[in-house]
Image 1 (cartoon, helix red, strand yellow):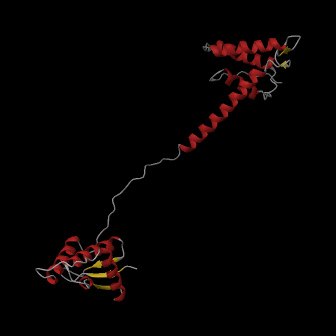
Image 2 (image 1 turned 90 degrees about the vertical axis):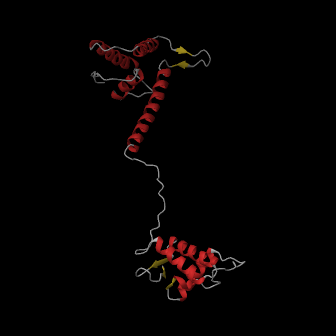
Image 3 (image 1 turned 180 degrees about the vertical axis):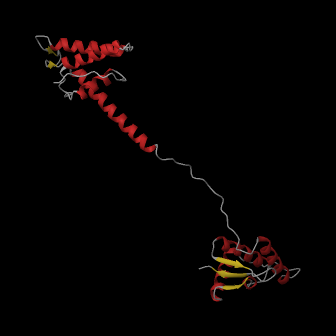
Length: 235
């Protein structure tokens, strides 16, 4: 095996340094040549001392652990487990710690990669905008109100009894659509009053007109001021 050339780097802890030495030398983690790894580890600590870099206590503890494992492996007789009566590999505990460290390291690298990918995207909370229904061109709300008032005053008597059976807005919407279809899709607004001519029908017709415009079912237009308002079916 070629000699390992020390390159001073910064490691988060002793396990990171050990894993670096093992991967750099392409060593089988399940069969660590403890003498070689221990020498490389101590050489690295010596280089840190030469550069006047403070060595953390956990690095020194790991160095002592490696030396202890090395000394146990040099014993003439193998270590026997008192419970199982099996030969104990002095490196087993270190191997398990390294395997666990490698799992967390790989998981951390995956999380870091996902974080880098997600950092390329920006999200914004959905915004709510108020609904706006623009009136047809050439016509404003005042014109509609004036036309409605004119129809009201011209057709309704000064004193009139309210019909006991009121006409709903839904009924007038149906009336307007039906009348438009029967009149080639276009007619005057005044021709929508076809039932009782009562004030309730005027109100229902006006509200039905506004609702149909909101639903974009019809189009209303006026050629010029004071002329009749015409309705067109939008289909």
